Length: 137
Image 1: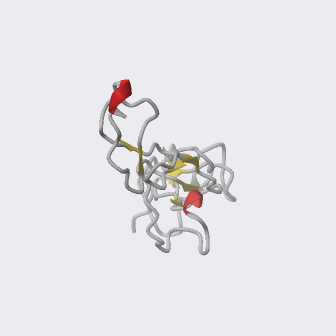
Image 2: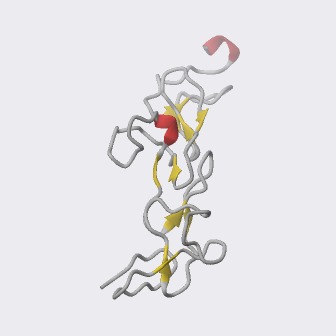
């Protein structure tokens, strides 16, 4: 409160939280790898499986990209051109070479991984320029 030199945060919305000891009346975006339920709740560790993650400011929309029946702590599917190790790890840009790509939901230990984070082989009759690009006809 104001007596100790701090101001109370405005009630945080889902995807935001109020930092402990904050001297400002602003909310902070929830960091990647965490889920913030809003209100007085502290950030909670994301429990995403490999191929999923909790992005910064994550707000569960109940979309089909989330595992069915899962909680918001399970995050959303990793986007095309990235890989996701799960838990509190953020989505990382794909490091695939030409002829390879990282599909949506890609995890570093996913089947068909060639070497390390090389991605998956490009589908037949398509071109893959590598890195974060997807297959093209």
